[in-house]
Length: 308
Image: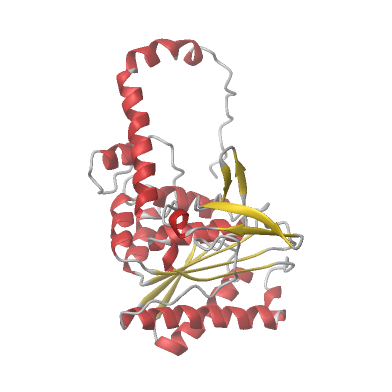
């Protein structure tokens, strides 16, 4: 068995220390091989939005096609490690409420890796996530780490543990926090238990920090014109106030239509297809109307970079 840890923090920093504590527990409990990817040290080309991959997918070809070829950055190497892993743990410190930008770049690229997505949808991996903040300005960090974990493991059902901690801003200072390290050891044990259960044809339920949403275990709600939703998995909720407490109720019917389900994925793909179909049917109109915008020059000229 193999476990891959995707760490978006500093080398030998807090999140890496936390990941290694989880790894030690995994190795002790099930003997799985653990590998760490330092995302901050990797080179990953930014997705340009060229849609070469999406066009390929919509034609029914799930082989990953990107204009950035294998060997021009570290993406394909990291993706191969993901393919080989039985479990994936995603972690990041909070940078201005969010995970690090380098982790987001990796998430953007993985979203279009069609044959990888197809593979994990048919055979979910085990997933876990954790994050850490210097203060409590961290509202979206764990949610994005969990979202990425669900994307990389194939389903919200693949997530077995997730936890976030605040108020550890200094590099390496997490070693002073016994409670955090103990919790990370338990996260590792939970991942090991899930791997063992899967080997025996069983499934381990989520045991991480509970959230408002029963699907993705997120703690956010979004008000839309037609109701209240979990913004992460797009599961609709019914809101009420009971004893001065806000209560969100999710029906089985709505939970089955979440963003990570087969139904949700097909809805997303069909909506993309409709948009491309409309554009194709009106390509001459688009070409004519877009002229005034392409002729409107307002972009600044960027200076040459120092290469030494």
